Image (cartoon, rainbow, N blue to C red; front, side, top):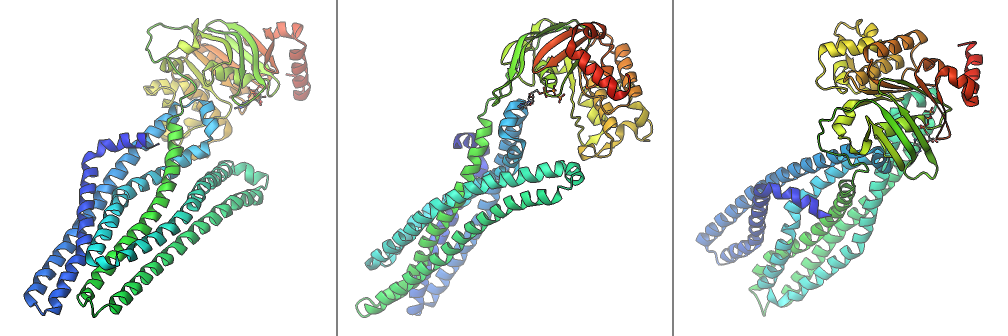
Length: 574
Ligand SMILES: Nc1ncnc2c1ncn2[C@@H]1O[C@H](COP(=O)(O)OP(=O)(O)OP(=O)(O)O)[C@@H](O)[C@H]1O
């Protein structure tokens, strides 16, 4: 679990060593303080003014070195922790970017975000704790134990007795803290997912008057989180006073023992204060160290969750070799079947068809018949469970990812624009797009009409979740983003649904004229949208039921006829 983290820590050798060295010096300074105090007391009892001055200066010097080293320790530890966390976060983000759809679905977006932000903060804590406390604890523990025995060798057993008591308490409390921290993480994920879903779907929540239900859902998980937090707080609140009590008992015991034998050993009296000092250091390092370990175990849970993501291999492996072969836009599905991960039913079953470069293909079928699944496979968001897909005659699995993304553009059903400017969004389709390319794309997609109304045109801001654009405007922009890179295969997955018939016709005419050599797939609810296509695929229950032109299908496919008649009746004639 630690291996990945350590490989990053190795890049920060200087700050790591800086913090370790300053920590060791600071630890020894605090160990020497009670010792010097005892010598000062001895001088005081002997009325040795020169000795008092000398030891006093030593004490001050020691305290000053301790403070400087303490500050240096924190500075170096923070430098290491921030650096390493930022590197691991970047590694994690890269990994998530390499994930396929099914990888992301398996984790869920909510937990990936929590891992990226919250779990990462825990990694910072682990590194800070290690560099500031974990090393200090054994030095102080062993050092104060030895120094305590040297100070009052007669009462060695007092230290061992108190050590045993504190260790026992920690031994019983520790496992329950561990469990609480793991549970806490699970509920934190849950809380995050509920909040994210409800805020992203705020329109649905409001329009269905679901505020109360959503609040209830959130409150339930938030209460659970709160309950766990309180429990963790209880454990900590019992630990601190329990530890103080043990120190008090130890002090009382040692005062009593020294007092009882004062006549036999009068010198012991000057050792009491330094002995109690060591006792305090020993027990506090143990108790504090125990609590640090509890924090540590919380951090380890986070580290495990991060490693889980980093060690997951992307489901889809792309060929990274650049090829110079200029693939054409022909598409072939050869006996392709596909099941979604975790699903027992085939979403596509033995699908075979061939489309020549430059053709326009309509895909129609009832809802859930597999239309979107088919095109997701075509741009390789998933790999088929069996069968082969060929693009320009080349097996899709052999096509370089960059080439594939340039060749084939999918404009999805759920349009998603990013916050930024219109130009930023368009350039996602082609990072090198010129002003001219953008003009051409918005003309074809009929987005020009509304962009021309903005004085800042391409620099017009797209707000979060494209809130300042209507559904139809968003669709036009995402079509423009799809065509800007001049793809050889363009797929419009129900992406003209929010356009009126006139604009839809204009978009299609534009595509035909200006993207003449591209193969275009159009998934549409309405047959009207695809009736002029060169080929229409009729899908039902994951299978291709019929294929042909509109006129051919009207004669040969009962399913097509049925869909057509139903739509005609509903629209009052197409
Ligand atoms: N991510 C997914 N995980 C599991 N099953 C899925 C997933 N996406 C779709 N399905 C299932 O696969 C089948 C085909 O879905 P698909 O989205 O391809 O249909 P569609 O024809 O595009 O429907 P619509 O016209 O409603 O968009 C459906 O039964 C659906 O429940």
